[in-house]
Image (cartoon, rainbow, N blue to C red; front, side, top):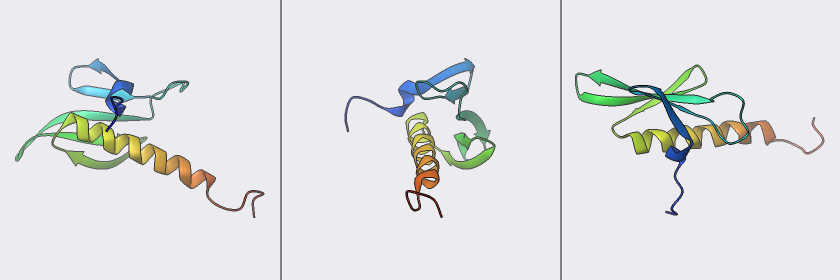
Length: 84
């Protein structure tokens, strides 16, 4: 892996909550929240309003959020170049 990681796009506005936005974005597109669970601390990963999963590490949570954003952007580009 290169020296860049999606965690560099996060900000922590409140303790235990990280928001992620790409350069040029007006608002964050997702968030990661540290939560207590029966199995120990976990990170809740949210893209927009949808919970996309849970993670054991902040690093993995940020990777999942970034990949989910890229997949969502790609869905908007799929299809014929001139529309249907």
